[in-house]
Length: 82
Ligand SMILES: [Zn+2]
Image: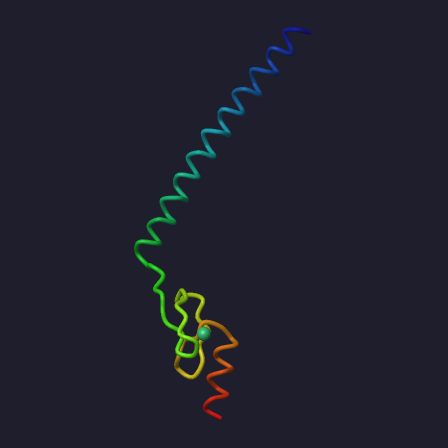
């Protein structure tokens, strides 16, 4: 009985070490990829023409050829024009 327990613990230990090593490696790879993407395409901060707030370009709400910080500002700008 003690011998079986020994083997079970050994297998679990090897499996845990394997999973740990693998998760660390994949984490490092994905981190590198994210860094590469970030340095290639930095998120530009642009100014909202309506409220003057700075916000990341990828969150922009496009309307009438301009980029607004939110749907609210886009609607506000439209109200000015009308
Ligand atoms: Zn705004």
